[in-house]
Length: 134
Image (cartoon, rainbow, N blue to C red; front, side, top):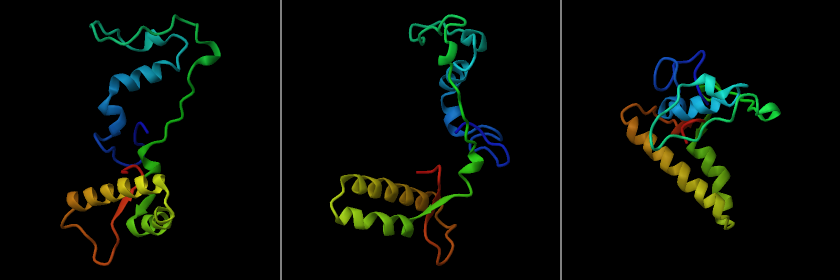
């Protein structure tokens, strides 16, 4: 995640939550794609500053290759509560701890969606979340 191209961003017209919530971390990550990471961002002068970037041209082949997946790819995809329950409940009944966690996590996400969107329900429709929501 990191931005939006043909859909509105979920924080600003072009910014996606993960980038805007910790812009410094995002900038540092993107800096590590550069042959000279320190040149891409101003230094931070505080007692809690992050470690210095590696020296210029020492990353060589270890520079990061980043593939960004914009918010656009998640909005056409959704999880419906009935689909999740149909897949996960048999695994919970079989005793899977992971399935129990997934069910608890997704049920909480569905519950929060219902609270946040109260009054906007579609009659007969299951609760759903976009792929990026859970």
